[in-house]
Image (cartoon, rainbow, N blue to C red):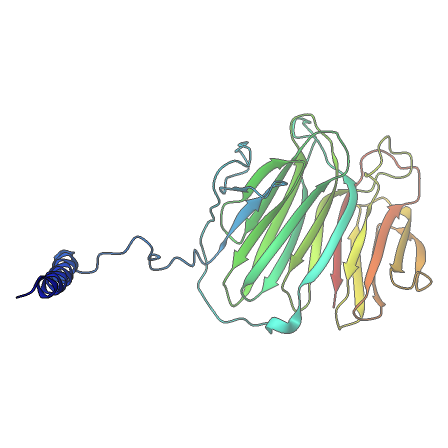
Length: 303
């Protein structure tokens, strides 16, 4: 046999032996052994919970309100609620509302209370709650509670908490904000969530009047994006003592639309027709000088 034929035979034998080696290695692995690149079963994550994302895009683990750890841990979420199909069409769009320039109580203040915002979602989907610090008076204890899970809390000047639910029925979400330590920051809160008839209720608000020593403690203002229904309803209560108040609703696309509605009483309950697919500014303030701290409960609903 010539040298060329020996070389050819040697190459063929090498290839065959290499193939046999691969077969032996593959058959020696245990049945069902995962590969290094395969994702584990159920890697889509839990059915319900919340994650935190800070100013630098960092995520954080869920915690109770007693925890004060900064947002440096890897992302995680709590789980609860069964998987189900949505009850609201995916094309319905997100409900969006922002509450602006309200001042928080300090956690170290014995009389301090957290501003609390409660709303419900319809069907599975995501919720985002975005905190924006508007003043340098310290950081905010910012928490998001999804259904019956433990709240996710972070001490932030600004950042976003995200909640997820897979329940086919309504899920209650609760956002709370209070100043860390002696801090009394002024903040904005923006919410986005899926709901057929969205409404957000503020509790532990303030209605302290024009003589308040600090801005951000007299009523509540913000903006809301109307979808196809064409109405905004506002219901508020500030206790047994009647006050002069001013409620205003302004079309942010056409500022001449809307109006200013003064009144006197212990609360208001009104529904106003508005133009669909536009954003509106709302404001409710105590027009009197005030008598100190006055608690405010207020619900904004829209379609």
